[in-house]
Length: 222
Length: 226
Picture 1: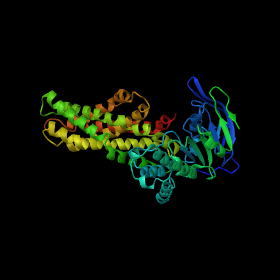
Picture 2 (picture 1 turned 180 degrees about the vertical axis):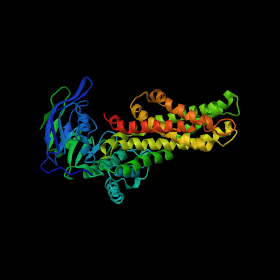
Picture 3 (picture 1 turned 30 degrees about the vertical axis):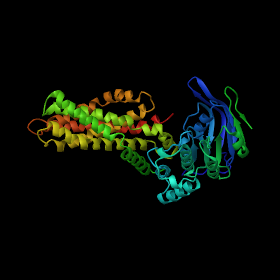
Picture 4 (picture 1 turned 45 degrees about the horizontal axis):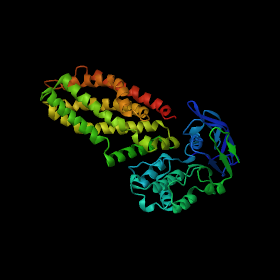
């Protein structure tokens, strides 16, 4: 696991963030500061750059311009110091279809350097918390989309990250799954959160800040 | 940072477990090689081969069978998000190159465990050349694994992956194939193994392995960038 950030350090600081894909600009002039432990909800229509923003914060995409500081690490130069401190839940569950859920979680635990005994205990606790205990030894390919999402949430928080980056975290989840997910990735777990959503009614009450991205419009923070 | 040894074992173990469970690459590679030997047997209308012809048939077949495995080496990482998972983890990304190259090396050795005896059964009068052939196979496989992993990681993001891998890989492995055939020719010669320039060709193979192993290790981190 990586070093912890100083408490006074904001979780995220953006200034004039820009990202281009060739001729097309996906993000332009995004700026905000998110204090540690707070939640940011990102809203906007399809194509507004919400997923692009999340992938930049996760160090999976390089910014084209502007200042990006996440957990005290300036991106992209300090990206290597940030890895292992972020939990990323994207459109894809990042699980291998030919391995079981438990095997996938063990694989990710090894990548994050979690000792075997600690990993087994953590995996068992997460599988219980996500209601996946009984299906954990089935191949991911045989699970429903909702069950894969539950496993992806386990994968996302397995290494106890300081910052959660969540792209439509409720997608494919039933009512029970949403409640269980809230326990694992909801506010108040000691982590900072960025939540991209098309369901503002559900996530706005949890937000400390809201970022609205528009197509061809300036980003607005409230 | 997670120790590289731990990450290497995790990625290699995952790949080998998935292959054992699904058998997506190895059976296809082996079936291709055996079928090609059958075609050569009837097309050449020969029950016995030696020297350069035996070396050519063996290495052309093994190379094209290897391409099938190389094409699929990174498909799971691309389609199931493995690249993102590895980029998010606190590991040296070059470990992915080492683990994938080792997985490919294991596939190639397993392929040869099945197909070289078939080749010997179809074409060789004597098994005396098989022991020195083992050294050539291991050195050539190391080079193929390093080059194949590098090219596969570059081609996997292209929709023309199946076309791109052979187009880029084959020119790069020409020196490897020349050295492998050069080393194989004397040991499969008529009348038993001879060792003319055998050591020289093994050194060329070793040099190729070293160069492409180091190039792969050095550039792989950059290939994973967006």
